[in-house]
Image (cartoon, rainbow, N blue to C red; front, side, top):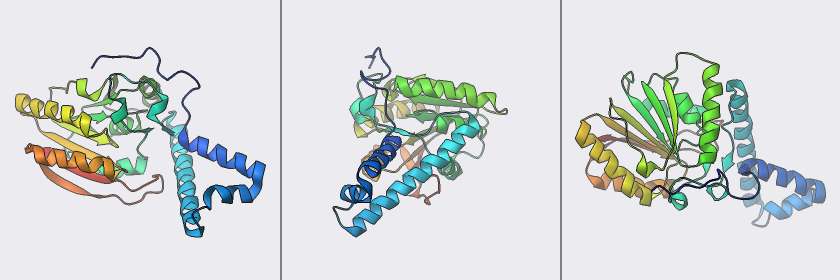
Amino acid sequence: MSEKHSADVLPGEAPADWWSAKRKAAIRIFRNEGVSGIWRKIGAGGPLEALSRVGDEIRCMQCALICSIWDKRHHTQTSGLIGMEQVSVVGSNKEHGTAIVSISPRMFKFLTRFFPVDRSNATLVDFGSGKGRLALLASTVGFRKVIGVEYSPFAHNIAQENLKNFRAGGDGMSECVFINADAVDFQLPTQGPLMLVFNNPFGLEVWRRVLPNIVSHRKETGENIRLLLSGSMPEVLAPVVQFVRESGHFTEAAQGVSPLFIDSYSRYYYWVFDAA
């Protein structure tokens, strides 16, 4: 798939961060209509639903604050949530993608338990790397190389800038590169074992083309391959997990649900597969 858009974002205003937009809307309603306006917005379903919505909003604000502090410390801009309807992409699989949002630092640390113990010759590939936080974090834990693959030029350009700033503040990091490409077109590196990470990944239609590429790579190179599928949307992950299981080319090494971390808006569901 080679179709490309000339602009990083769709015509109109710059992409709006969903969390920031919700916070600004709440402040605007409170200023204009007071507490009664807020209640009309959230209280239609009754007190219990209103409390649940308030709890969700507080957690989102808490996560946004903690991750913005992380960004300031590392001179990056990886926070926020951008809907795919606001940006252009490389290729024609836009409808099968999910929002541009970064994994929380504590969630990343939790998932590292599924990384290979010896990573010195392994490459980690982050499919759907967004603004680059996961790949940047992975570059600090001993992989030979880290590659972020992202089909949104908007997010890819931010990740490139984050890489410059993040590396400037530290040493002892792996080689890290970002590639603006559709996952179905990406050629897996041929040297060494692979750790393939799919965090809040694309839908099943894209997997029908990506998984055969992974299987072919395994047959051609004989290298070890581990898949880590994770995310907050089990309804998206479940059919993908079933597809991987039924392929007959992978054995399931782990599955579960993460703790709820202070910097994460939700628990994560995860599955780990090793190439048979």
